[in-house]
Image 1 (cartoon, rainbow, N blue to C red):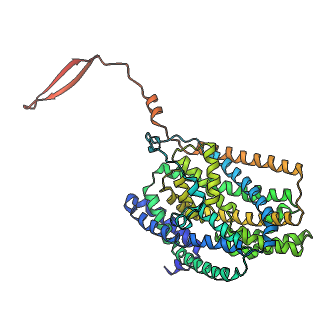
Image 2 (image 1 turned 180 degrees about the vertical axis):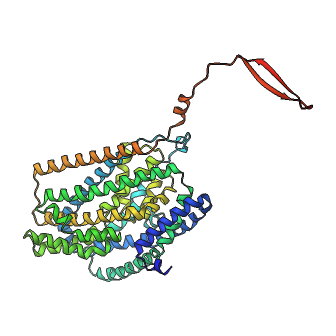
Length: 470
């Protein structure tokens, strides 16, 4: 026991996950009651998230001066939207890697479910911010926070509000950290309950999610994002991947990029200095951009779209192009909050079973490492590109851009083909009822006579032969 307590926190979580899966597989439905423990943990971890996000956005935007906000806002938004677009396109295209899997279900409630219409006014417009907060309407909460933070820019004496708000942020952060210390217990309960109630074919499908998620994260982290930055700036691919490797390793090992923000700022300054582009303006922009960008959904958070698309595939729910576009739009807004808020919200938005969120938590121990890696690369790359844009050293070379697009398409196509081929060969696909019926055959060779024996009360057997009925 003493040795277990001396393990690092990430190791404790991993051990809890493995133990939960083992217990669930061994005891099956008998440990389904642990789902209640997992639900309690889920509710507790959400306690401080919404107020933390509101205060974080308000203080982050409100602390800027008018000159800083006007100088940064336009180019910050252009670069952010560009990288978001590249990331979302990559993620949604990679979702095509999910293999063709015929449902084992003959009946689905989706066939008779009348989907209610969505009130987009209430979804996005915080006409009553307190109601939006009470209902966890994340897009409206984010929009309200942006309005409030932006309005503080021109207000004199705003430090009297921002200073205590920062102290409150620290208190909320401590609440979250104190609850997260019990993460191994929550993960154990969730993993045990999930493993005990999942069917073997469901575990096979969950493997598909892991493979697609990790492959997408690696493509974004080590090709799409750094190669795009090297295409439009004087910086090299190696400046991000090799020059910042210590940050990337730490982000992957700890699963936490918040603690790396000051180090990221220094790393960005070093990249500018390496290319003799270091100025006071570049240092100032790097110091401003990173903490602000941290409040916006990084590419690591956008990877959660993989789970939502997996959830639709898992439940045999087909999403049209329009539905996918709306998912991307609503998802980006909802991901301003923590994924523990946005995932249940988006599952409900897509009318998918809320129980699938527990699958997300069970796999979060593994996927969080890769999402943190992708988020770290995104923050560094975004800061370098935005600062380069602000100081006027962006380079748009058509030949380089075409090479970037062609090579990215090739790598993604190879990845999708490889994943589909792998799962089509390794995993045994389920056949639906219609094919089973088609494979049924009738034996047309009818016997002429059918013989059977009658047992009499005097224990004598009589054989009777009758002609077969046609």
